Length: 146
Image 1 (tube, one colour):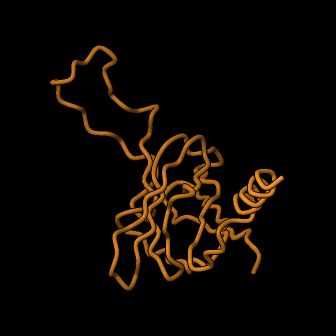
Image 2 (cartoon, rainbow, N blue to C red; image 1 turned 45 degrees about the horizontal axis):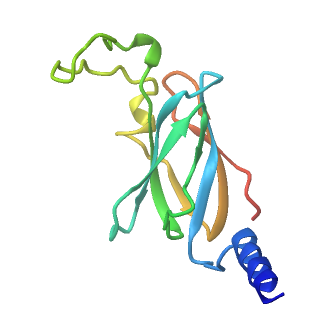
């Protein structure tokens, strides 16, 4: 009986979380020219400094912070990078010592090195979608509860 209670208590903590209200979980979709971004990175750089940027991988148009991420709520500059896989010159027969050709970026500089996009991450779940067209900064759609 005690083992059952311990198991149920553990499952409850797993489902409800550990109650760390000072952590932000970030997830969403990234599309460019109406298509999901196949691969890339969404980076959240603290405006105030004091810690390193948080990078979250994009897979098949979606990104989500891992359960072990310790993203603090606050104001961040967002930078999105993604290679144009259709225009890459990667050689499938290249060896480990062969030079890697430069990648061609999919999204414009206004999405990454010239980004002026800033967001406030709140404690808890932040569901944020990014979308855009050729040569325009990304548009933001927040779906998380206010």
